[in-house]
Length: 285
Image (cartoon, rainbow, N blue to C red):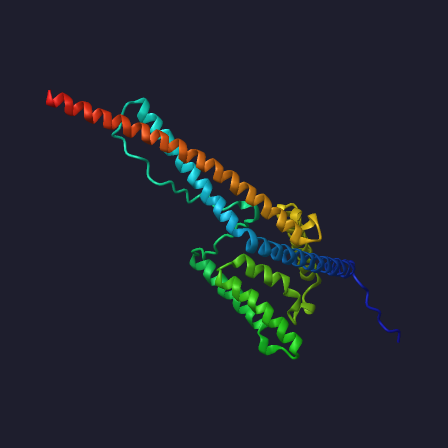
């Protein structure tokens, strides 16, 4: 009796092709993550050295800028009082501009993480997806130390997403790891094809995001300084000299404004004293 031969369907061939695509995309994601990690570490170290050696200069520059703005306001008010022959207007309060921070050259924005309010339906969906993932990746189900470590890392991601009430992140993890489900291989080929399509889309999105992050870092001024020379100390010394020159120029400008302010203040005080003397003589007569 002739043995029956299993015919491979077009859907199975397509699924096999998509698996190859998925593995290639995952390799690319891993390469980009490694590149991003290396670049971020290098720039963070450069920024740390920069701040350690130049941070105080930028603090001084920030203070000088605020003092200059304050004295400009005071001079403007004194000129107005002199022009109006009015000595009763009070001096302006000390200048405080909380929105003007340090030189943003090496500043990186960091948004505060907040837990958004959610409706009961979303809360129930969060718990459902979380339970499914926790059952799938519980570390106690591991059979080797390597698998346990992988499961623990995955549970960290799952717990973080649940703590942030991020249903989209949990669902993304579920789609990403759906293939790890022991029953996945027994599912209809149509379902596996649908998963493969979503996984390719997810990986393409991840690749685009990583490439944009790398491009953003490479387009930053920090990257330009870091790449300017292999001798980072020389770059930092140059930046320190530039910051020192800026500080000296601002100090000189502030001193000029202080002198101008004091002259106007003395002129206004003298006029007020003359007015008081004239008023006393008028009363005496």
